[in-house]
Image (cartoon, rainbow, N blue to C red; front, side):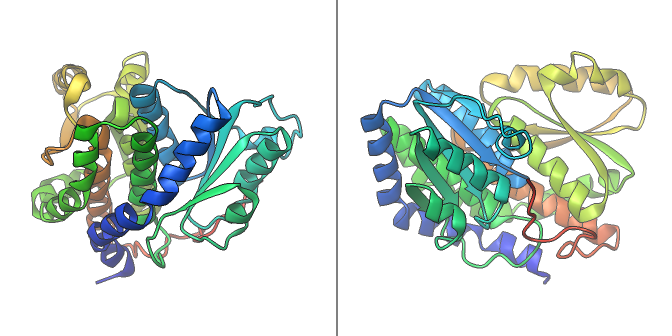
Length: 330
């Protein structure tokens, strides 16, 4: 078993460990956010972590009625013209904690007197040192270049902070079910076999909406970096505002479906695509979790799918060409 597949399998244990060890940190962060009177969140991230930030945009917006902005790090680095973000909580998400541009946003936030939070798998990293507060992902070493367990741990960390900010008994009970839901997703690997061949290239579209727009982005990234398939993600709403024109006979389109309030939109676009002859594929959730948490087991299914597509193409998913585990951008 390669490292990527092995680390995918570790995720139930990672989630259980984070729920146990990270609860106190999530409570501290929520308490400081309430004390500081912050109006909303500015989140800086890159790569898979940026998709965790996109998830947080929907999660904090829906559960906590907070406005979330995704930072443009180059405004803090190349352009040296950072926006005024006073009274915002500035969050940096980075599995390594060493991304210079994410760190620059946190440093810029501190200069403006903002409360700053690091979400990282490396508690001794520079990101963790420059932020006032830190929530460690507790994922253990992640050796494969594509992120798996640190990504789902980042989603779970965001959900834990959201719950600590606005407690809800049902959502709290659902959080406790996340490790079991990941285990059930791992058991479904055989069900996605029929999705592999259509996604072996050269191109694919991945669609999601709401909370699972972030999942669509992450699955597209995984297909691109592990299998070299030119995969592009869209929100269903944006896709229907123009890009649907690319739909044609045989085009593989993967729909990421977490159910919930956007289910009717997913069904509508499926029907339109099938009418155009596109090869519509379905990655659906059966975890029983509320829609807000389905991006976690669905991301695991997406990782399994990307792994199996890479193997089908004869590609080593552990070491994608031209990229490294820690990418330092400004």
